[in-house]
Image (cartoon, rainbow, N blue to C red; front, top):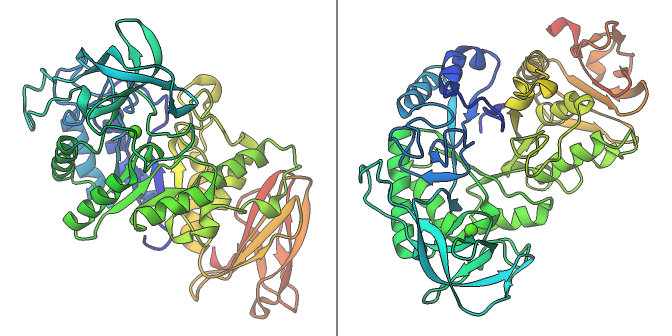
Length: 484
Ligand code: CA
C-alpha cells in the first residue's frame, strides 16, 4: 500500500435503498479524492433477495443489477450500467475500487428441493441431534430472469453443505446436507464446534462443480467490473484452502497488481494470524481486536487503560497485514455484531487509526456521511477530512510512544525532511498535559493544535521538549506552526 493511503467503506447498513447510491458516489468522486480518500470499498454488487437487500443475502453472482429477478432489475444501489459508470468515474478520479465478495452462502432460492440431511446442535455443529431425515430446503437456483446469460450453471442441494429451514415440517434448525463424502469443511473457525454454517444455503466449496463455477465467475466479475481489489465477506465460515487457491488465482490473473482484504470477525489476534498464514499472507484482515478495544474504551467512563489500547491487536502483531477501522455496517447500532464506538470517542478512535505508523486505515461512511436514520445522523465529514489532511501532511516517520498513563497517552511522529513532527495527545479523563520530546532542533519553535480544541500556542523548550495539552475526553494534534 502506498504511503498514507486511506480507504473508505462507502456504505452503511441503512444507506438508502432508492437505487441512487452509485450515482451519488459518482457525483461525489472528485470531492472524495480531494478529501484524501484513495480507495472505496463498495457494497456487494450482486443481486440479493430484494431491492432492499444490503447485498449479503446474495441471490445471483452473475446479476449486477441487470436482470429482472427478485422483482427488481437494480440492486439496492443501482443498475449494472450505473455501477460500471460509477467505477469508471472513480477510476478517472484516481480512486481505487474494492468489491465486496460474498461466497459463503446463497439466499432467496427459486424453489425447494427434497434431500437427505441431519439436524445438528446449534451450539456444536459437529454433534448430530437427529438420524437421517428427508427434508425440503430452499436450494434450487434457476435464475430464469437471466436466461443463461453469462453462465448456465444452476445450483442444487448437492452444491450446498447446510441449510437452516425444513419447509415440509416448517422447522428452523441447522441441517447438515448428506452426500457422498460430504461434511462441513474442516478448514473453518471452530466456534460452535464448526462454524462452516453461518446462514441461508451454505455453499459447499469442496464440490468440483462449485469450484469450477466460482473460478469462472471471478474471472468474469473482474473483467466486467475492472475493480482494483476485493473485500471477502465471512472468511471465518469459508474453507481456507479454497480461499487460498482462489486468491492465488486472482493474484496470478492480475499479475500481483491487486488488493485483497477479508473479514475474519473474531476478537482474537492469534486466530487472525493463523488465517494469514493459511492463506500465504495474500489477504489483509480487518483489525477486529482494535475495534473492540476502542468500543470498550468508549463505554468505560474513563476507566479503560489506554496504555493497553493496542494490546493483542493485529496492527501491533502483524502490522503489514492489518486494516484498521473504527466501525462498520455490522457494528453499527441495531446490527448483528453491534459494538459501536461511542460518539465522544470517535475523534480519538480516528486519531488511533489515521496518525499511527502502521495499518491501512478504513473510514466508515456511517461516520463520514452519518447514519441514515434521524436519531443517529451525525455527520463527521469535516472532522475526518481535517484529520486525513493532517495524516497526509504530517503523519510520517517513526513514532515515539508515551503510553505511560492510564487515561492520558501520546505519541510523536518524527516527520520527514519536508514535514513537521506530529504530536498526538489523548485523554479519556480530565484535561491533561504531557511532556514529549520533539527534538533539540525544535528548541524555541511554536506548536499549534490542528484539532481546533486548543487555540493557544506551545513553545518548545531549549532541550527540545514540549508540554502538550489536551482537553477532557479529547484528542489534540500538534504541529510546528511554520509548516501550516
Ligand atoms: Ca460456510
